[in-house]
Amino acid sequence: MTGAPLNSINQEKRAQVSLRATVIGLIANILLAGSKILVGLQAQAVSVVADGFNNLSDMGAVLVSFISLWLARKPRDEAHPFGHGRMEYIGSLAISMLILYIGLDLARTSWQAIRAPKMPLFSWPVLFITAAGIPVKVFLYFFYRKNGREYNIDPLLASAQDSINDVLITTVIVAGLLLSHFYGLLADGFLGLGVAVLILFSGFKILRDTVNRLIGGRPDKALGAGAIAILRSFPEILDIHDFVLHDYGPGRAYASVHAEVQGNAKLLDIHEAIDRAEREIMARLKLPINIHIDPVLPDAGGEDSLAKRISAYLSEYDPPLSMHDFRLVPGKTLIKLIFDITIPAEAQQKEEEMIADITAFAQGLDPRHRCIINVDHDYFDSIS
Image 1 (cartoon, helix red, strand yellow):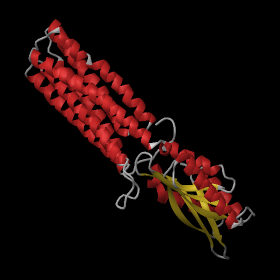
Image 2 (image 1 turned 90 degrees about the horizontal axis):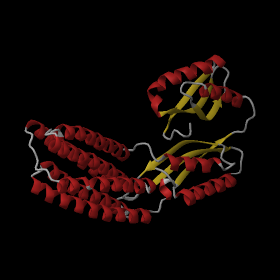
Image 3 (image 1 turned 30 degrees about the vertical axis):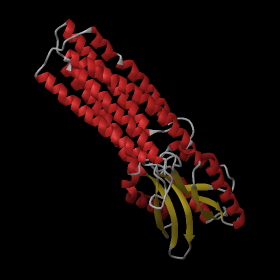
Image 4 (image 1 turned 135 degrees about the vertical axis):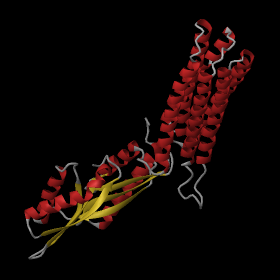
């Protein structure tokens, strides 16, 4: 996505954009479908008729896009305290299934054309009406993609992919008509099979990305980076960790984070600063956030020097790690080191190996050291 962070986008504006796209898409696909089916039946050109019915299915995709976004606008209720924003993802899921169906149906039709090729009745009006769909679909592709990216409307982005698929389909049909007329070659079956593979691939990609979002994939990076930048602009916040961005649909994210503050500062002063940070993030990003306070002691040597040595070791580890909430429990024969480390998501399989390495390093500094390490996972990689 480009432009403003996702949560700051006006939901009413998104609805207006979706309605405009729906009207334009319906008009374009009705005209294309009606004209192609009519001339295809007259010319006994099965491929042209199939392309017309493909445009009819595109009308369904446009309607699914609008209905899903309209349902997503419903306010929160008792059964859905975080709103209905994920309905947009369900709309994208439905469009991906429609694209996969079109790809499979085109593959079946193409295979039949390869096994039993037929010569269509060629005419220039049929060719021109069929080819007229190409610039229309190119326009819809750029129109859907621009608005889908600008306002983060996933169903529109899925419809954009569907439109470029239609450009490929119609191009193959036009090429098949020309080859059959001028060279007597019936290659449309082979060309159609190749296009079907591309369509199936694009449908699978939309399906995969949508499922990832539905099951809790990586959230909007621009939104999270904006919140992190605001938090780090407050001098009272020394550092942050455990930042989590929960995605409940476009424009409906919630965040939580741990903020390290001076342990000897006045609680009322820290509370006021945290409140200001929460209000600023809400005002600028429309992002509700819950900030947990972690007090840390000022640098006075001793355990802090030890903490710095361990932090330096972690920063040079592969992959680099970070530490927070360091505490030391002294003793004559046993010194407990209690702290948290943050591990990148891609390195979770090495968790036990990392803990063993850190423990060995700490005991190399002093054999009395015993590490009690709590592992956090980096849910938002821009922090590390």
